[in-house]
Amino acid sequence: MTRARSNRLKYIMSKETVTFYLLILPWLLGLIFFMLGPIVSSFFISFLQWDLITPPKFIGLKNYIDMFTKDELFWKSLKVTSIYVLFRVPLTIVAALILALLMNQNVPGIGVFRTIYYIPAVISGVAVSMLWVWMFNDNFGLVNGVLAKMGIRGPGWFSDPDWSLTTMIIISLYNIGATAVIFLAGLKNIPETIYEAAEIDGAGPVRRFFSITIPLITPTILFNLLMTLIASFQTFTEALIITNGGPVNSTLFFNLYLYQNAFTYSKLGYASALAWILFVITLAVTYVIFRYSNRWVYYEGGGR
Image 1 (cartoon, rainbow, N blue to C red):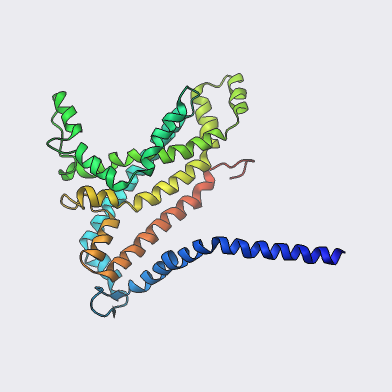
Image 2: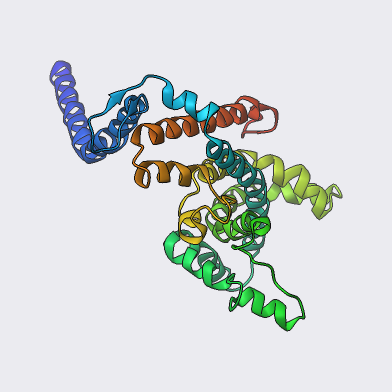
């Protein structure tokens, strides 16, 4: 009887295993053919000189050497992207946290406001970019129109090299709703009893925020920090639609320069090398954040 039951259990487990792999098969095929396949291929292509028309030619490390020694636009795009990441990431984290705190209030209709703030996350980036082009237009844009009513002459938001990158950083904050929702989930996970105990001990709102709220949502902060960082390094749509890298390459983001090399200049090998450099940079920054996160991230149970 025991042996029969054991065989029956093995049969059920094997059947469940087969069912599990059949259900995830579409995802596995997509991962292999549409993600891992291109990733591996791009690594080998980065050692080639290839324009998609003539046969590929193996040139070894020449793409990487030329990138660091001869290509001024490589360094320009890296500088633009670094400045963008340096400012956009902390601004997004702070703004999203403030928005999450507001959405965490128990007021009538708060669910509607949460939905409204999240809507930009599901709107097409191209459509939003066209909206920004209209709003920040030098001559008839809404922003300069409002400034003109106040007697202020608005700058060339996207046409002035001194303002273009700053404007790109400003408009990037429209999408903080998705990050704020994740922060909201972290805030909801904090027991109210902790706040009540702190209030009884005499802790004010500011003290409760910095001594309770911030430490208890540090895992959420870490997650949002990494996601925002990776997304910032991969910025592409807004730069392509709004400025196409101009004026004077002031918004030439790394991903946009990669795209131009691949599909404008037909330098597939060089573009693949650029992609791997971006991957290494992103991986290195992510590793450093993870490596030192145990100094400031507190997990439930007191672990770090």
